Image (cartoon, rainbow, N blue to C red; front, side, top):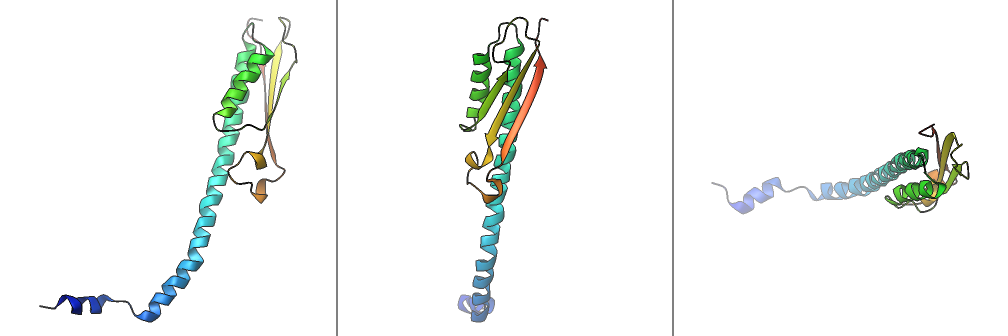
Length: 140
């Protein structure tokens, strides 16, 4: 039967290999972090895109109902955008004054990506995401 100290010596790594592991770690870990955080940023952009799509759709749905107003459209779209923290955006509703004679409602949301991601990445500087939806009013 072998003693415990003899077994440890048998499986111990040579000292020269310890330096190689440290160098490999120093090279690989920054790359892993880069891919990890880049993945988060692209997932955030996808989340912003889907939320903007939903805000435009739900805002237009509020506006096509008889009695829907421009203020209600803006409130609903702003509420949905706020669910993921989008607070810098441009929201346009056409026509500006909804009447009984209004046939179509158009809702347009523009979001600057460099101000609505987790880390302002160089890749998204100056980029905007714009979504627009036109729906026919109900009860016509």
